[in-house]
Length: 315
Image (cartoon, rainbow, N blue to C red):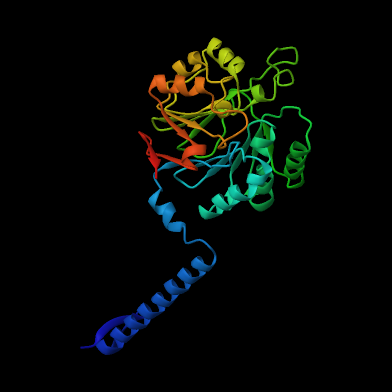
């Protein structure tokens, strides 16, 4: 039976067989296009796109095992990325590889918490290999070849550079709030001015919230910083706490931990390190609080995900 079709505004008749053939032709063409797209995507290394679909409603925080150092990747539900520290220079290739495995070719925000090599040296490789939109840094005056190389790359690539200070908000995604808790805005004569702080105590501390889920990143800040934040009433409760300074007893005082009340404590630390980290005192304090302790030297790379209500440790 002929099937009516509009051609140029006037009705025309084509046979049912012709109609079926046309539909089959379109179907074959569509299948070819899809096949080509799959081939191109696969060859380009973007087969990970399916992961984005699965995690599209979740905030994902990956504590990359870089040995004795820190490197933390935050990925928002919309796919925006923030990389906090990058471990030693020797860890740079691993960080780049982990990012590549997750399909990440662009870092929207990079944070260097402080200029020690076990935090910023690996970022040099990331800066060389990936597009970075903005860098937030302690801007602590410090003289080292590693810090010079890192700053030179940022300058040469014309990447916007910001000195992170308490009260600043870092915009990454509408659904995620990122607040800088430390170091403070101060005048030159202030005892907490950036030039007077030790390198560890100049660490950028970040408080991140996603719905009801909260995370506190502490760099290597020590007890002096903790006491000042307590004095100012600036210590928030956080469900997840990145333990400062790799679990050293010079950080994570009982007074500070009792205010944060972490349900999950993550320690970024190298196996069999020569410092004896994490120190027994820190583990004892966290155990006494009932915090779940996760360690990169034991568990390897640690992945936490939140739906805005609860955190889940991803296997």
